Image (cartoon, rainbow, N blue to C red; front, side):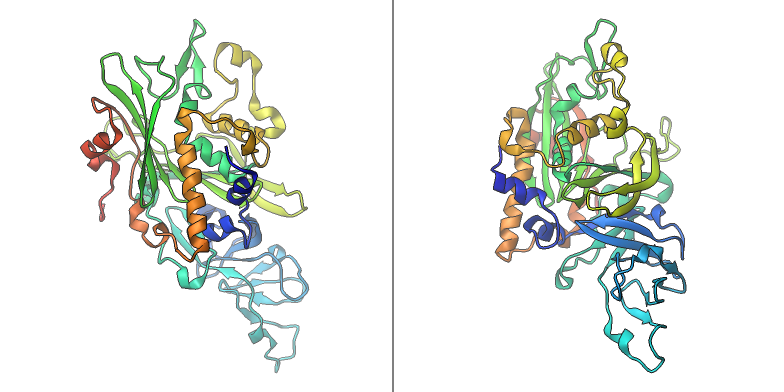
Length: 431
């Protein structure tokens, strides 16, 4: 378990908080590129790390993410006119470019230089992998580019991205991502005799529902393996990559090696779940290859926070308001939860813990070692940053070129398994 102080350190992400400062050293996913699809399209309201912002794509195609309020009288810039390379406040006509410069102030006399003295908060953006990335940290520490996650390295036609809002802290969602044991229960279906049938590949060894976990630290985070015994003396390994600070590469049998799950903090109480995917390593025309697709019903909508602020976002069709589409009859006869879709099952568990889980009350077991390792790593990095030690990974985007692994093997140790499958878990530079 964590102390109350440690729990607060890990879950508070706003400006000036220790964890918020650490997050701001990384390029972070802010939007799907499709949310600001064309030059001079409608602006959109968003919230990132507790800051209310407005995003727009200017006439030249550059995405700007700026403070949500005009510095004149604090009018909402969301209602502004996106025109001629800037967002113009409709209250008095003040206009701002993607860098936050005031480039027109028609309410002042022509001879006034007042506009040259006005600068609003605007964050650098970068587009890669169908995602608009944002950097919110000190300019002197800004990395050249975002992390080279696998989904950023595939062609647009081989990728499908989606995101939706989750009403809970990023941390308990990220912890669920690093919990390989729950797939033997939460995501199971029921066979005719009532026994469990896993949705992950568990052929021949469904009864091994307590995987042995091993964690190995890396420059980008850590890699951990869940080992399950097979009747023939070999092992089934699910090897997951945790990439700092909010990324999980989860093994899927025959699945998309470019896929990733991202838990991006909106504020202390909310996060986005990004599900981003690239095609399998096999060529696009290979037998059995299928294009990536969206598999969860989502809808564009708005979300109102507790403080009254409004955000434009994607919402899952099945969510807290309709009990996640739960069907008790199906729970008795078809699925372990009665809740459709794996992401929705995760959401029900994570939101059900409350906005911020009380980790002083938990009792962790042997299958929680990856969760413990992640918390320790983040707490250590927070402490180091407070001592002036900058994190390594943000300035080395190439270290993120890794894959998960789903495999049967005679190797009983994770280090031996990874050594035998180096080409399967590392994406070479230039690939």
